[in-house]
Picture 1 (cartoon, helix red, strand yellow):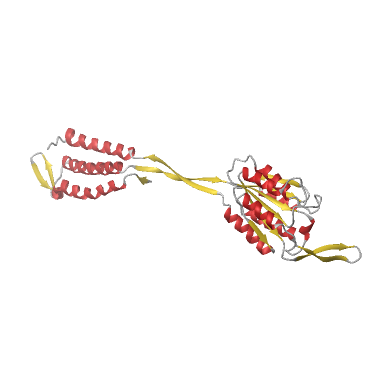
Picture 2 (tube, helix red, strand yellow):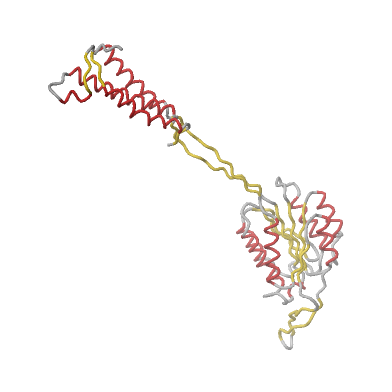
Length: 325
């Protein structure tokens, strides 16, 4: 319960003064007697009824004041309005992602960090593209993050012929992002190599992404210099060879610049986690809370009972007791 005009309730403090005034002297015809006179001697029914009528008048005034304060019954409803972001993760699954300069390796670290990133989103549609010599959609845009985790777990190096087709990956992601109702569209592209495959030039694909207002964050993964790479030797079993880390940072920087995104370099698993956290902060969904107050007026109840009591007061004093000023 609430009051629309709570300041009106201050009028209740005037009533004790009015009560004192009414009972200071009671008037019955031409005879005046003290308010406490009914304690001395015998009091008639008419005197008692006259006193009761004064209480009825006071109660009716109390109800009128409450009605003027406009009591209301209701509640405030919060309406959550969200504007999600369409995000596609493009993950390099070329053979070089087996390098173990990340823990457990580049491929495993990229998958684990991608799942943590997905877990932190709430209202965004997320899709998954994987690429090596070709690019394929592993998952279309979806809000079912559980399915996305399963798709990520099912990715394997070697499921696509080896190579690095960055341009094709961007083009495939653009197809997934194009046409969505959401205003913000983001591609997070992770690779550890140089574009050496595919029919589409990476910068040409980036220009197409910019035309569709798609922002691209590029991530180059790989330590500085050389990285340990596991090799299955038929004679000696698993052994490691050192392979040079080759990332075309100039192209990745230019892709990010063209699309108003950013380029990040991850040299270890911890740095990769920090990059995804930074992107998570940069691309926050818009959440707006609107309040709606739903109330029902209750003033007519005290007004109705106040009128009834006031009418009763008039009937008692004017019609029955015939008291006039």
